[in-house]
Length: 224
Image 1 (cartoon, rainbow, N blue to C red):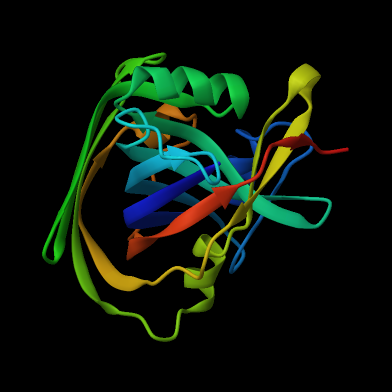
Image 2: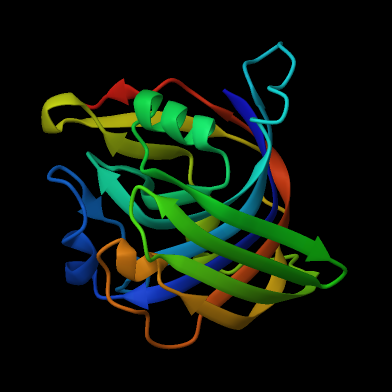
């Protein structure tokens, strides 16, 4: 698939690796940085989903998304593990669950970016109720030299998902290096992380912003 990930806010919290390991399926290990697991709350605008060399899908291929993610490794290959992905389009929710087997959820969602500011809200309707988020982020200056943690949470070139019969699948991801900006989380009133089975985060958030990149995602294949 091809798609665009734009106006992305990256809000990450430090976690005990043993705590994060409890929400992972067998066969995946927690990927750590500075001795910790990292759990991200990622609002952005998904745009122009489609297949290579074909027109983008109208309406259903563009929507706001907020995902809860962490970082894993299997057989030495790092990747992303999605705990949940909330959007406001029901058909893409069902398609993504059926094809990539990702835990997409449907409900109300908005993600707006103005000069120097991003605002996001989610109210989940299906399949799990009583989960929501309200996020306000102040966007700062461009980062010329990303820190090791900046690179750890953004330089991810594949995603893992559940396969048949408790298997694991992997799909490669390609895009240019993220253009990053410093950012500050002004408000995070969130229950999506708790709905994913993790305790509420403690401590300050590591926050970044990116205007976005165009992305290619390969077909998921079973990992042996």
